[in-house]
Image (cartoon, rainbow, N blue to C red; front, side, top):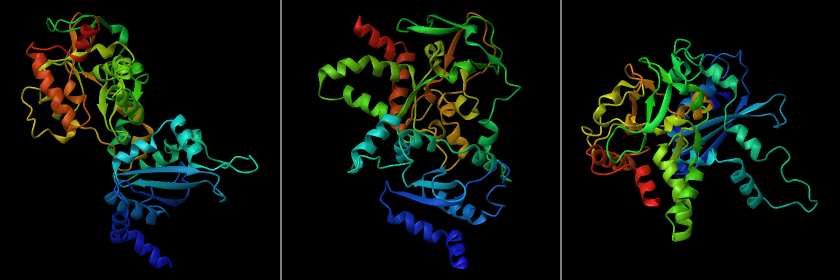
Length: 372
């Protein structure tokens, strides 16, 4: 029996057949054994090496994998379980909020004749706790010989990083032309490489996939009244927020501070941006709409407890001064990094080209002129 199990762990054919037998939105759940402790070695060199082999095979056949611990399985210690989604869009279901989960539980379970609860150890808040992998798993994951890049980038803050408080910025009328609205300006000198408002980035508004879907259905539906009522909310989310698909489907993050008034720097003139060198060479003017590079679209790792534990941090963009920004200078961002997929970015690029030419106004300015 041990030899058979070992062969299954090491042979990708079985896992591949399993994945092929599932529908496109299929889910596979497997127990991994006793939960890890913070002083355990990584699976690949410890007693759980068969688990490491199995997870390696699963990563090749599933698009999203999530690990959680459960202490009510009637074992002598908490056990870990792995949930694997064949399609990455199914991540949106994993990250639903507590009210949605509680409604689903209520609708899908029959009550008991005694009136006693059907579930003893599971409810919506418990499911929310599953969304964040245990700290011990993050620790052992980062002990791999080939240390994953996210272990260095997402855990903690670089002590050498120069941070600039939001008090070093202010808002006033933008200098970008007739159709521009509010803008963000430096009220103090900001040195090259400094990160702006790190403290405020943790307070961002996150409009998750299911929430955004509900809002947009009302906006784009047949009811003119409902559409009008949510139009300001849609303008706020889409006009001030930046889109991504880290939670599986389209969602938005909106800065909660005045950094949300940062305008686009046309033709590569933005002075605040991502530290990724590849993006800085491409502008709305020279990008090929039929061949947009994949690195523009942030995609979640198939499996990374580090990534999942810091998902909201990933959704709140970390931006740095690309050069010295002088007091009184307008702070400009790169809107090419603000969209979630090819189609929406193509539309955004077309709009940016028109706005940069002074022919049209941005979404917020247009909305405000329409409501006046």
